[in-house]
Image (tube, one colour):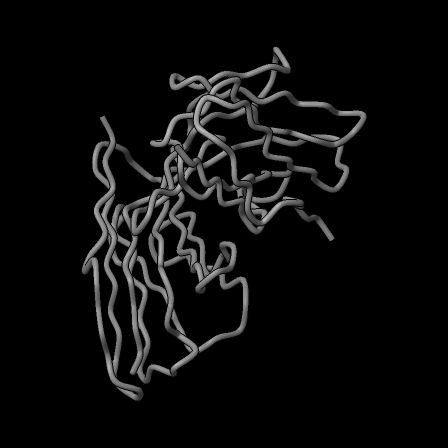
Length: 115
Length: 114
């Protein structure tokens, strides 16, 4: 079966420091991968999605970037964090090439607090 | 622009009472519809989905939702709620030809009281 792992689960970082959140998916090949952010008391906003290694699409202009160095690895980064980057970050994946490929599954999330 | 509307930000209800969480989406020829549940400090779990076929879909824990194309709605219902159903519920839509991206509603917090 497929699983998704996301870490770290909780992170407190000072303003101006770098960020790296990592996500890996197991049990599938060539998944679509996504990063969502959930700000406090708000819905979910799609930040980035990737259909393959090195292929990243950004949905909104922001202080963050994403990379996909391997098929099942998705990394969210920032060189200098802002207070407004605080939130709950969720990695997600979609299986490709199957009849169930219209469903997106989420990881457990990473809480980021920028202080 | 494509959008999803969850009309209620919070729904308080007593245990064992029925509940309906409302969801409407902007019209499109082809849509896939989802309900996700988020328990405190956790990620999103898929509750149920409509991809095609029967317009009434059910989850394993007693929730159901009905796809109504004419009203562009996908309301979530449960005939009798439990304390453990307290959570945030998100409606989401995937539009055909959208590169398989989900658009979420703002969420509805279901608060079940004893």
